Amino acid sequence: MNLDDLQKIVQILQSVKALVGQQNPWIPVYAAIGGALVGAVAAIVPNMLIERFRERRATKALTDAIVCEVSALLTIIKHRRYVETMEQIVETLSSTPGSTRQFEVTISYDYFKIYHANLERIDLIDHSIRVKVVTFYQLLEAVIHDVKPGGPLASQPRTVDPFAEALSIVKLAIELGHEIERIWSGEAANAV
Image (cartoon, rainbow, N blue to C red):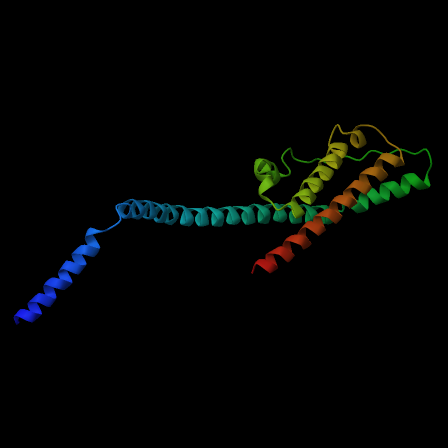
């Protein structure tokens, strides 16, 4: 290395020193704030994504369980021929004015286990199906109240009107139940 090369190196080092020596004193502050922000985002965003995934999974699981219970109830109503029996009672009472009848069905206390166990979480279910689910269960509970032992249709002979009303409520509940199944099967198909 000759003297000219050494002088060039010294000049370059002096230029670099001048650049570094005139450094903005706020750069370390900016770097610290920037690092903190990047760290916070890196910590928060994955947790938010994980929480959102868990929430979606819980919503789907709850809705699946409720819809399965609705389907099971519709199957039980069909196989036990409750609607047909009530239709026969209404027909008989309609064709014989002034006649009365009783109708009693023994039903366990917690017939809607999944629904009752998850009432505090029902708000997780999408609104488009939640209203129908709650209405479905309320309609069935009203009819169960009427036909269970001690209920108005079970405890005293009644004319056609209370039976026609109960039959109408059961049919409405069945219609809602099938609508719930259709909505959910459509949503589940779209999610795949």
